[in-house]
Length: 395
Figure 1 (spheres, rainbow, N blue to C red):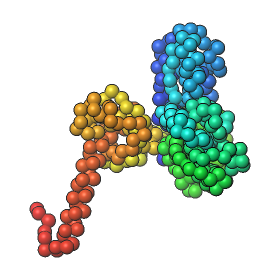
Figure 2 (figure 1 turned 60 degrees about the vertical axis):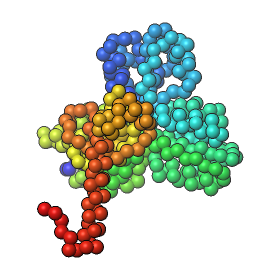
Figure 3 (figure 1 turned 180 degrees about the vertical axis):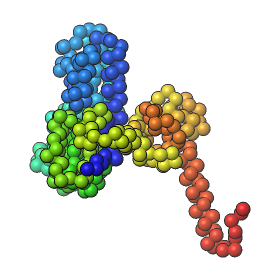
């Protein structure tokens, strides 16, 4: 039996960031808690609880002076005000992609558009976006919900960051057909989500059985399972390795594995140990999760997600995010760069050598631009050579 891991699986940048923040808070041993589950993974939530960062459902459960961690799914502006009024210290673990969607929803409303969020009505992320987008915002989860969308001159459409892209496009096409008017569409789906879905679909066509690992209350994990189940008859959604049994894989030669953005590596590894007791598999897993698809010299397209003190953090659909030092971004002074670079900017960058133990993949915008320039010169030279065949390349 051969086990194959989807190219993109496990923690995304937003989840990893939130989890790291919560565990650092636990190490500080301060009175604290998360407002609602930090991420949609019951095992991790329980572990945080044992380490002194419990999950609380209301600000009423916090005492003045305590630290409240806002979950990766985000909260509305009223919650920030209430936390400040109660004299709580806020540790904001909202995913940068969700934060961007909140701001876009608010901007659409202020510009006179009717905000329409395509996503799951009861998902905490969607609820937070609605709160930022204002009282007229409306959520549609499926085509039949379009009838609830009021008539308007201008529609501003956003997407839940973990929603299925194909389903979004289907709903959007139906909405535009049923409701005419001016449209401004913000494709706020997370790049990592899109990459994870595409990788799972590709692998699903090549295996006999497929295991999707992640919390059952996780939207992105559930969407992964639904996508995979359409292409692989023997698809299973599990939370932990304890749910696996030999009967699932009877007569199977190739098994596919993926995991939702809220699934810790240790849970993935535990599931694999149950499925395949091979000493060599551990190293294969590490390679698949870290370095198999990113190598020095590769050119990637990335989106700016955070600007640090001396480097820019980007998302390029890989398990680890990228870091571009200011010195590798351009020759301009750092104080100028910090003012000109914006979250959401798109950039091409080149993977440069670094250690696999780094928290981020090291990238260079300058080197990518240099490669592009040399390729351009090479194309010009080749064209000139075809026009003048007697011209020889200098030694």
